[in-house]
Image 1: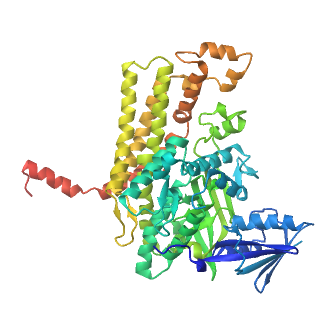
Image 2: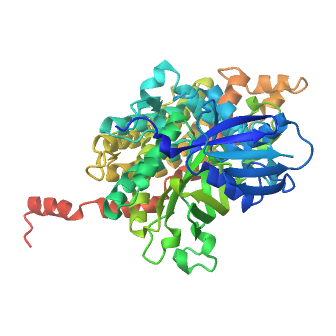
Image 3: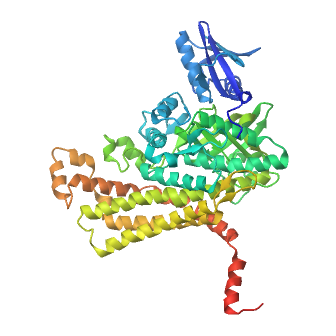
Length: 106
Length: 482
């Protein structure tokens, strides 16, 4: 028995809006799936209207996403919450580790 | 959090927005569409059972990876007892739902992968087994509902996958990248995938060298971009959509079995979730291990649970009509039990005679012959049971008015008057409607083809049976010399 899930098999994604941040935990590869969706498929996971994602930029430690329209921080978080859950990540209160940062603006 | 409650499961799927279609229309909210809701209700009930002290022994196991209590739907069998409890879970969930445990196929795919990835790693030095164990730990820690996807559309069945005019007739890898693979194709007849968190995909069958692009197994979250679910649509779907109250339906809460076709439109899978990629030699073995596990559970336990429901309803129907002492009805009920319990006995035997496979892997697989006999027996027996159920329930099974007529103030009194027998009209109509759900429903053909059509079991039995040994026994007693 090799006990708990090894930390190296997990990854932690911080979603940052202009006013706050939240952390998600997923199996390794969760971030790659998010990136593939945003960059190759030009879509935020779980949302099927092509106009939602206006711009995607790769940054040093993650992604910069620009969503269409005027949104509050709360609305941006709710979009990203759905997106990351749809690719297998879950919110976590653990905030000491951050492997990737997804900055969101509109 | 390791064993989720029904409420926690429902909360977790609220945030998921897979691309689901029913009858050509996009389902925006799976909790509002009557068809998708029936799948979620059924899956929630499976979560619920794990928290009922009466069923804990069956529904909760101990993880061989972490030592933590887990839902048995995520357990990898480590003993004959585990196999027995796995089959008991299939029996229990069918009895409680009258439809699929939509986590069932996922469970059997994980077991087949646990065995085969261990063996592949030994031969090739790959790291599939560690990846799978990480995935299983993750799924166990979050008690994820996993469905399974195996059957490809296949196209022209006379041609091999690589000979098809359209190569997408079998799910395949179209791109290999540093961070993962991209797959294209479809999987059909997938039970309940829409209500699951994850789908475990296996190749559709044995493959040969040269067919590496089709040799792929992986897990993916159900909302992964590029996935589309096109749900089955049947008269029962239409009936559910049209119902003013679920009380009008034969299986009010959980419905008939709901499946979908899953389309993979260039879907990215990170390497961490890939458990086989290109190893054609292991595809047949992997699918055979899935089949033997699933045939024990489907044929010898799940459908036996359905039979228990049908037999119980027929006994009630005979009492409601005052025919319970009629000899031919009693004989038919006994025959139904004989057929059903013969398959059940085969599942118990398959679990008891199961063995570690491969030796050293720690993974237990059921006895192949008994598993196949269980499934083949029930494939034929289920039709027989439904024939007898239709006989006992009478013509009302196809001519009955609806519950809505009973509730209508103008014609309701007629229904109460003329459908009353030894029991009030409401009870009689409900039991007949319940039997209609089976006898005139989808489960006959579903039982025939589910876990592989009978011809697949016949081929397996042909290969697994030691014909020479049987011939020698006959020769010995008959004094036949070569």
